[in-house]
Image 1 (cartoon, rainbow, N blue to C red):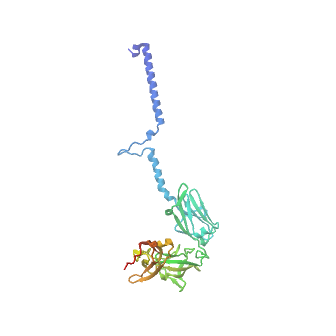
Image 2: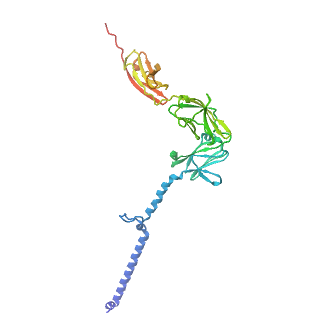
Length: 394
């Protein structure tokens, strides 16, 4: 007999109610599950902990991390210098370029922002020919109506900025030396007919006879006696962007020199350079101080000597600080220079401070400072003043 007939009409109503409740419960559960999937999308993309032997490339985090690394690695390559040519063409510059006089020089340097450095002639003489403009991603330097005097080094400095504070990044500077060949001027013009240059024993000396054309042949000459100076590349060398360099100056290099340039049928001389030899010391002096007595009685005389053993022909200057300065006691010194025999050329420089009829105010610290072109060094000694000894009674 069917189950429905066993319960009668009331049973059929009860069974129908149970079925309807089951359907409603199932629909509510599905809607809830669907709602949770829509409101929590991150659950499916959240990566689980990696396990050995399984791929972990799934999920958006691994994808978005890669472009950031690439951007940091590519950033240094953004800074470069190009020359803007006619018809919108660009040419990456090398160490040197040549631009005919009268033509326009236009350089573009990528960076935001950048700063430019130009030959001092252009910085001092602002006649409106030089224009510098900063765009969003690069800076542009434009020089019009160019002349041979514009020859020199042009530098682009990328800037590092924090808020409004910016500074040059010197290690990322890009330099180019620009020649402006002038058919009438082989040398970069100078307002000085004579230029005095010191020949220092411990420093190379540069004769900056710059030419406007890299094709010019340049030689070095002495005025008296008139002759060409040999340039062997070791003692003296030449660089077309800088001039002649005397690497280890010696006394025989002193005198009046000049440069001569030849190009085609044109020959010209440069500014005259008066070279003066200066004996520079190898190091600051090392003075030694000594008092005639560390204890002196009132009324006696005191001598404090300060001496320096150093190179011959190197001038040493002495200065003193002493207790008597406080009351205006004048300074009395004796200075001398004497050669030292044996070995290398040496000399002894000495300064002696004289204090006559010592008084109580002369007690204290005596300081000597010896100075040469490399620097100064100070040394001190203390002197005690004791009462004058009373004469013994007979």
